[in-house]
Image 1 (tube, rainbow, N blue to C red):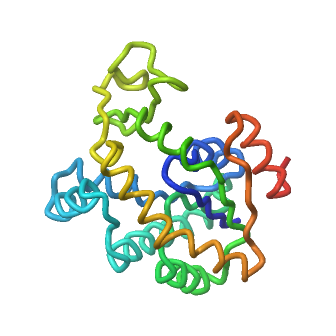
Image 2 (cartoon, one colour):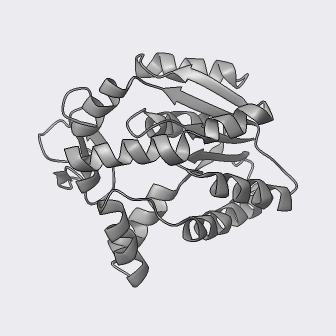
Length: 222
């Protein structure tokens, strides 16, 4: 099974991917994770990605597509030897039609295709509140929220003890740019996948457990 989670920043698609991926034996493919790894290494590529993300812009398609293709090749190889891998769950990719078409081609080259695209829909004002309150561990990347999901000790990651920070792209100016980019570049993909008959819209303005249950039901995995 190959599934995409779509939704504006702050919609909760990352949280749902973490819950649903293991349950359905789907490897999470999140370009954000791949980018953060490169940034942490402070390589030439990592520094370039860091500059792009902190400016509130998107990493170029050709770079993103290449990273995803390598990851999918690894997943395909693992499926042949690991019963705990049944496919992939895409979180934050694709973001543009060019990326969507590239993903179609990559999957076709592996004799497979997308099974569903889940759109997690949340009102704009709720998205802004969620993003502004988000805090991220600079060591392991774990995400918290100052109101809805705070750490046990303020400013400290529960998982690794790392320092929690407000990322540059979670500050007001960057939030506005990110949501505008989503509206202009990514939201049109909903029509692309609707035309393919694989788009499913889920109400994301509910508690986390309810959203999870709705997604599993929509995928026929309840």
